[in-house]
Length: 608
Image 1 (cartoon, rainbow, N blue to C red):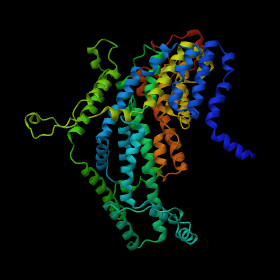
Image 2: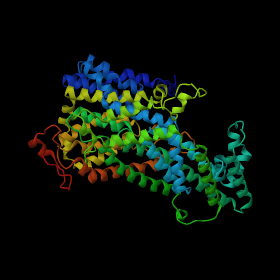
Image 3: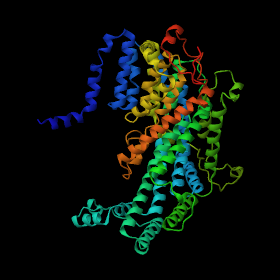
Image 4: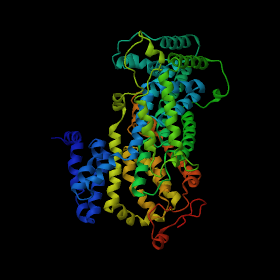
């Protein structure tokens, strides 16, 4: 058998080989380390390999602690199983249910079109509008759902601006190349069978007519047509690539926006039970300015790279581009008009959505007294707030109630429809992510109870030589790169326990290292496989891997710098990062001072 054939066969069964060989390769850990710590490290590394390679589904790997921790004597099942439904999981679940209600009644589409109407139709402004809308929606919806909803809207606008994509691609080639393709029979029309065309819509007729008229009657040379087509193709790419990036950025602004934020909260409660610094309100106050700064810089970079920044932003010109922009504006306004007036269900969802956000934000925002003071301390959490609001959705009517219905025998006697049904919620909620969260919390609990966390901390003392600001930036950059190849949820589950122990070993406030790495795990911009939103945009067929790489590298750098700026400015004031907190485990002052090397930067000096 040829070696190439053997490799192909091995590749076909690679996941099965990983599942069977990884436990054998890791066996020496059980004999070369202290008993309980070695067993826990064995399980942690086993799960890390399975998560990174996806040899097993992520949710299945997340359930491994339920069977391995008790059978290996690490943790009894009565301590493992509750980790899968902590109050953090309920907060996440309530956010997902609220998102499914918003999607059910189309409120997200109305918000998106309204923003696009406001920002205008010049390419740079439209890219900004797309990014603002996607980031806002992903604060409450999943990043994947936001991207899937925004891309069709973007494509409709692009078609009205530039016409048919295949024609645009042909115009990007030189006239000679196009002739050769036709002669050789390798042109786009001959490469694949064309599907049966349905009747074109009014929008398509307008765009085709406008394009044909321009090509026949504007007197442009073939070179000018090609240059204009290349410019339009760049704008098209900028539109498509900005949506998944903005969705990933926007998810960092709220605790429920992305899973890593909730994992941070869960692991803080596991490692530092007395830590109550971070909740929905305090996180939002910290992360929203960070998100807006990063979003603005990301917009400048994408608009610059893909041709949206030019004098047309400030100067009105009457030319072909202006005519296309008028048609694009008409498409947006027409789509918004088709939605009709806001109905009772949409208004109700909007009210509960705002109430949901306001109550979460004001429960205990830290910088002012929240409404939680009316209840016994520690009794009411963000999860309680979320579950109260979403529970109302299951019985609140979607039609405006009328007292006359009771006295009108001719009125319909059909049962009223609530804003949200359990079937819709059940179908919309990604239960695998909830299990993944639980697996991360179970892993953290095992590391703590087995002593593995302390054992790792003891071996991290040499790393305390690194200045704290540099350590934070390096860890953020490392996690941002690592998450390009692995799930951001799995990445942060794996690294947060190690980072917490590193902070304790260096006697640095744990939040100073844990917050930036958590945010950085959402900065996966360089590859199509990095996140589902990237994959959705790439699947459109209009983006190349090199487009994502050259855009994503700079986006990653900007993200790391923005996080560093946030942590060293308003983050220091909000979370008191210039001192080692009382809620963290006490450190050995004499041994720590030998290893610590934290520069005397205001706001970063460690006070023991």
